[in-house]
Structures are given as C-alpha cells and as structure tokens.
Length: 294
Image (cartoon, rainbow, N blue to C red; front, top):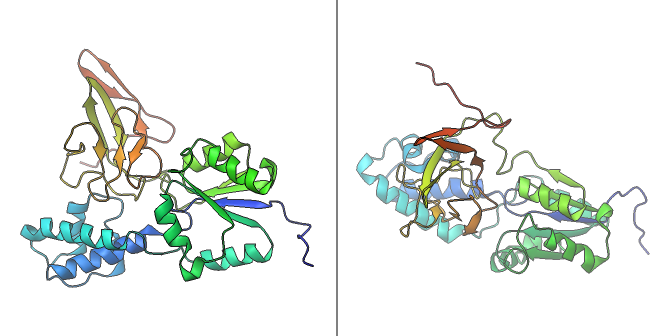
C-alpha cells in the first residue's frame, strides 16, 4: 500500500486554468499567422505574430504583416477572429506543465482546477488524452460563485475533507490570490499572468458613463491586449458595456468588473476626481505616468 510522503506540506492543490496552466498566447500566434496567409501575406514568424499581444490589434498588424496592404486590415482582423473562434478551446499548455502535474500525482496530491472558465469549455479540455485522469475535481464560475468569492475553493476543500492550511491555490491574477486569502489558504502567484503589469508601459482610457468619469488600464484580463479594435471605441453597440473587440470579453463601465465572455477578473481601475468639469487621475504605487521623450 502506498503512503503519503511525510514531507508533503499540502494535500490539495487548486490551479487556475487560463494564464496558469493554459497558454492562450500560442493559440493567438497561430491564428495571426493563419489570418495573414488568408489575405495573401507571407506567414510571419512566431515572434512577429506574438507582437500583437499587449497592444491594439490594428497598429500591430503593420508589424506582424508588413506585406499586407492597409486596405486589407479589416479583412485580416475578421480572419483572425474567425480562426480564434475555431481554436479557442484547443489545448495549449505552458512548457513544463504536464511533467509537473504528473510529478504531483506521483506524490499523491489531490489536484483540482478552480477557474472562471465555463464548465463546457473546461470539461472539453480535461477530457483530452493528455489531461485525462490528472485532476480529481474542478469548479467553474458558471456553477458556483466567481472569483474572488472563496466559495469554489471551499467547495473543493469540503469535497475532499482538506483544511485550508493544507490547501494551496496557484493562479496568475490578483483575484486568485484574493480568493485564497478569503478562504484562509496559502497561495502562489505565477509571474507570467494577466495582472503582471508592474514595470510595463500600458495605455489607459477614460469613459463617461451615466454622467460619471471612469478610467482603466487598456489591457484585457483574458489576453493582455488593448480593448479597442477600432481606436477609441470601447463600448458595445448598446452603450452599456465595455467590450474587448478582439475576443468578446465584457466589463461593467462603472466598476471594470467582468460581466461576461472570456475575461478573467476585472479591469485595473485608475482613481479619478472631477472638479469644475476637469477630470484628474491619481497615481498609485503600481500606476505612474509615463513621460514621452520630445
């Protein structure tokens, strides 16, 4: 009979999915390459295709597809979105993830997934050959409370009878870490996640909604891309929601909270104040103005 390793600190490990185990940047790179070829351009390198991540799509096309004329950019964007929808549920794990999961299984850890992804999408992923049998249980936001509410973690701990101090949450956003904190669990944040904007130069945007100004970093939490496919167009057709035009993530204009689509938590909000019709933004420890050289 096998025995549990005595040196093991945690019995249950809960992983976030997107940005922690699943690498969506690989899929985006392949879709950009396919879209460029669709409109008659030469297939860009992985480096050139991945350049789109972190900035608005249209300006990045000039770098990813320098031989495609500008009048074809709208078609190029349409072809990209077509390919993305065809492959959005493909499995593309970060390097080293599978060996790590197998090693943890050998040490008899209970492995689970706690994610904002839909149940349908996660089930399709976990049923693939390479992931079959690796996870003992999972929770998704459409069947329990979403992050940072600790309910999904508490449900997983209750299912296996593991106390918080013996449970580890692994994620890539502040919502994952806050969920673990509320559940009383230790946590680990990976450094390549969606909320890792420290030290980076990011654009921001401001909108007025129901008479009040609101500002956010122009970075979608699903994939680190700017929201506006068409420059300065952030609202959907109803004018009620902020929309990432590339992948369809939806956010509340007044809070930045995720309201639908593939987003993983809310937008990073910038504090504002308004005096005599003039809007001022306020710096924070992680948000500083960038001085462009003259």
